[in-house]
Length: 468
Image 1 (tube, rainbow, N blue to C red):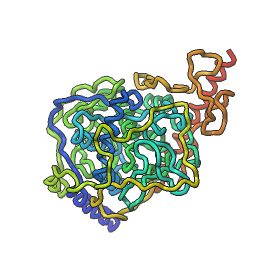
Image 2: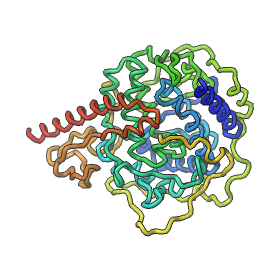
Image 3: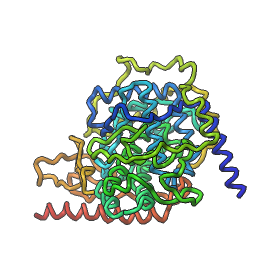
Image 4: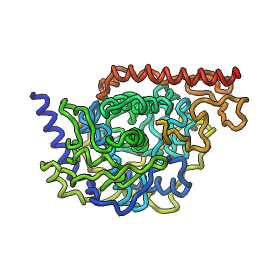
């Protein structure tokens, strides 16, 4: 009992402290403007640069530290819990709302990691043209892409880090066929949440490593694109049954039932308010999904507590004085990433290169060192959007399909795809990391078996094409 009282007090104090200093815009009660979230690699160059300028400004204002701290404070309530989908949907909308405070036309894109599941190193999203790749040797600082040499102040003052799981490689992610198998065979919200969280979701966090495998991972903008993809997966699953837009099931971290009337941690809003992406306050759809049905709902319930009292400061946007040495604002002539080359491997700095000074966000949002915490359908969703996507489902074989695009680069397993090596499934996630990060090792093992079987099927089909 004392343990739970202490946890509750820590969360309550964290809520009030964070909300007192961190921008908390209220959600609109109606949708006056609907936006469409799209795969970031399908955006025009102008749209991509607009997004990069906005997130650089968010970093300059110190808001990325705020998101990292918020997530870290209540990670035990929104992971391994059936608040996972709804709470992260609200978290993404919080992020997107702050984007729109800087640029009213900004929209959060998603990262379709399924396009390069068998070789994430070839994914342009992890190239210098987008978010950069592995951290540099020695300190794991990200030194390329739009987040190059970013600093962070939470949980301690440092650079933004990534440390790939296998040194120079992330390992495989989940193929979309495995995600679709989970969609087709899972009937309840609780089961679907558990399977996705402990499978396709977790393997990306662990693969990128560094800050990305911790509970303050939202200090990295790529967290929000990853979770937008997870949100899209949930939205696709919802389309298979209209009742999924009306209710949820499962339990929270205290084993209490979770329903549409349950109150989400931190935000004090009911779960039901998140169930329709084009509903009041959310106002978005995904590029290849049908718009959710109109589901009549009463005014969202809000828990009357110190959480809502703290909303008196919800319109206080950010630090009074931005960092003076930051030159990456919103000017059109700001430094821009180079053009994408999906075939090129991520450039790695020389091991003896001198560390450049990290770009530090404005300070003063959250106490440093506080709660350092553990690391933490057959439908249209399967459509391949990326024009340069290689092996969309791992099916094409060189020499058999003249329209297929191939990479002669070795995949993460060290094999050469041009010699038709079998694709390697994601490897089991580390048991200790799973437990520390509030995952379910037993469910992770079941999902490991499922994805391994799917990759075996893909390999068998590729061999059959060669045989024919």
